[in-house]
Length: 635
Image (cartoon, rainbow, N blue to C red):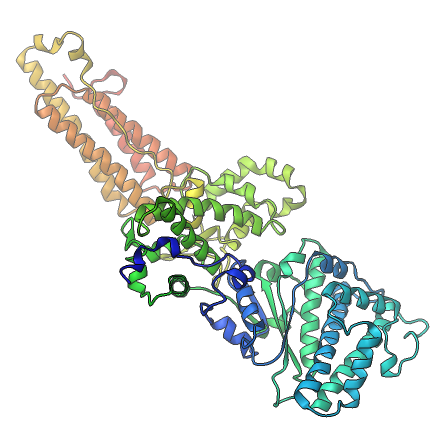
């Protein structure tokens, strides 16, 4: 393995999407990780596999569709723009849009099932075809469905047949167009479809496959390719859900379905029977440990070696980044889904490979972090372009600030942009309110919410932010792209020690009597003592404050810098340096005022800190002597 650690140029974690990964990536090998969602779909316990973009839905789908991925036959259905337009336009007078769309999906399932039964009966049963199967074969011939026509052509035939009540049903004993005077277009289409589905169900019963052969598995993926924000798209997906449930029940165990839906699409649906699908749902969730497993499997496959976890995270990659174990660093800064992990890992490899180093260094990971963050911020806006076209514009509310934002500060920032946002997105004015944008930003995983000692992001069993929750964190994935380097935009204390202006103009202190010099030195020491005392009181106050821990640490560090600078200046003054002590103390006072104002502006108006900062600033000004440069007790 020692030789392989240096082979950065050979390291590869696979392609971004499952479709390409199957062709020229790593899914061709044994790198697929059978997570719980895959097992539930494989066993037929769940039929709605829901997940974020890049969470591995298509990888599960393609694995089930491959030879050996599922014990029975499977049919993969992936709509494209043309088929999506055909379904969206499909309407039937007398029935709702959801019902009409479900009928065209039922037609697709029925025709696919008929084609499967004709082939399956001939191959698996090895005897004369039952009458019901011969009837299906005749139907397929009459309908032009025997060839390898694509989904679009199949839909076109179904649309024409159902809308005109003119499906080719002669094989089932129906000689002419199906119609009864006075019946609606939807009712006539339902009668026709029922004849076809009865014929398919009869074939399943006659072949008596249940218990002998696994059911036919319909796999439907890539619905995001046909999704728009309009009601027709909602009906398209809702109709699919209704049709899948209908087919599963109607064909008596002969078929089952697995539908792969993006979570934002599924969560946007609103229909009366939605409560009937909860038992069919499973949401893909990834842990850091699961993503580590994915990374190790792919690294092994690319290097062709028995790579261990320790060799990957400490040999190929550095052991830590900024003191944090490298795996924790990587997976904390990406959304919990394989695509993000693969892209981040490949970015690290690319930076190291371009440098020509034998392994990936800490600097390589840091460089890849910035690039990856920019990618993902842009990808997030594109991912939700259909449902939330305004999302990219909301990022401006967070640029160059801190990664912790309080509800009140976010509301203030929004108010400053409200008019421009409403003007740019007039159709979304109801969605562009402080509470609504918090819900959107949380739902997209851009923001997390503080709960107890943890910050939780969308996913799992976590509920959206409640009105009483006020502290939000930008996800670490997006912080570098937005220049969010600290928990809050705490101004850094910076002060350059200057020589006393009196000394700088002729050394006038040299003509002052010795007693006067002593008084001046005593005053300077007292001013430094006052400043150090103010810092010590503020640091003690921080321990009792309600500030978030990360912000408290940042404020603590800055006040510590003020105190350290005072200590350095005091030592220099004691050693005979002539310094402008008044200017130094006034600079610290001004810094405390600015720090209090910045905390309040960001929604952290904690009375134990902001008020105390302002109080200490005023005390220091009085100690110096206000605008006169003399303290109240100076002679």
